Image (cartoon, rainbow, N blue to C red; front, side, top):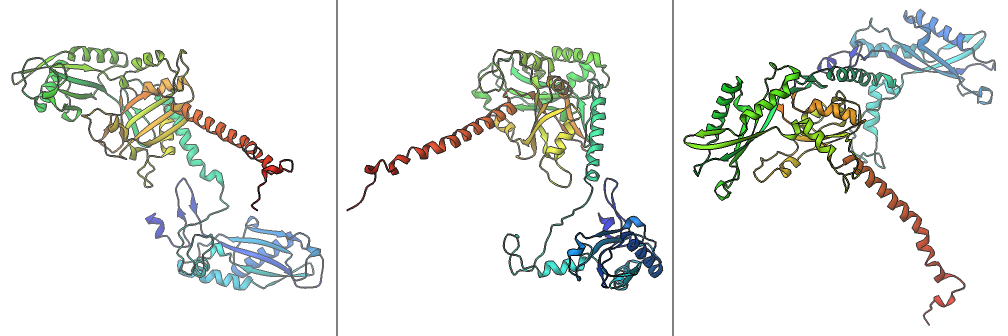
Length: 507
């Protein structure tokens, strides 16, 4: 943008998507008769005569395709002063002009061409030439400065106008669809590539995003002795990090281990937990695809139930893989799901969901760059299309994590995270996408942040319920419309001639 602002009016402006703005002079042509002849105009002779005139007068060779002439209909029925033809002339080779002289040269061309007479096989025609207002910035500026506004124009009457909107017409639609076409081709290639990636490799998405593998564990800490001494979070984290290094030869950064004491520990029962947390193990490159699930189970088995002695106080650790990271557990859940009620599913039938719910991802990663910080439907669709064919999509700010959390939940700043609901074409596409999202974190190129989202399948039938509500609304509206005449008809007898007793007069 800054580079284009320094380009003068004789140079080409480079745009995005392989487009550019090339300088040219556009002239509107109008042809009138200048004698009493009624012989019709020959368009080809007119074009040839004009091209020769331009070559002789300005040393400019204009291709025939850049000169458009069209005879006006019903020439015989027109008045003598009415034009017989109109056209457009484009002069594109302006490289011989310097920036400061181009406007002066344009005026000189118009002055030389306007009013000339052309003799075409003994019939004389007069040519009128002007630069269209759409090519004349100064003329448009005078127009908006003199514009009175008012009415339904959106401008204030009598005030100096300062418009801020441009209207562009007559550009090929396909030139503005190619970017999306290329993006779709890239998306399809990425989708095919991602389906062959195993669970230990990174999945590349669109917009610089990627899904990186990791193991997420939910931690729960209970007391295992009669002590009432409070838990030291730092000591617990240090002890766990040392245990992981000694048992699995894994160095876990402190930022990947989150521990939080639960409030009102003294008021809780002895069997209640005193702390909870999450552990992320991200360096899984040493594992092969076939062994990762077995290794995860081995880690959970070794960690679950261990006792930690922290300065003479013993605590017991419970460890589990969250359901949002366990595809097989979610599969068993939807297979056992009964449905019915307001869920949008049929009661008693085998469920085959097709909708994924993703929560806890940064809104700005799904926003249009340099346009907004709010998530965009188009950007979100492009990103998730690399996982499978999408049927429907919904994206919104997600403040519900804080509301759905327990009383010890952390505060969520509104607007920073979003909730994404993706409905795929069928259950097969849904299953493939859910498998790819399970056990991974979202990462953006150039950012150190890793979004450890929660993913689940749609138990509420979000899109199904929305469709049912729309259908119910239409039914109610249709019923009210059909009932409307009957409502008026029921009052009609009061004013009919056969029921004169219903008329009342004050004497």
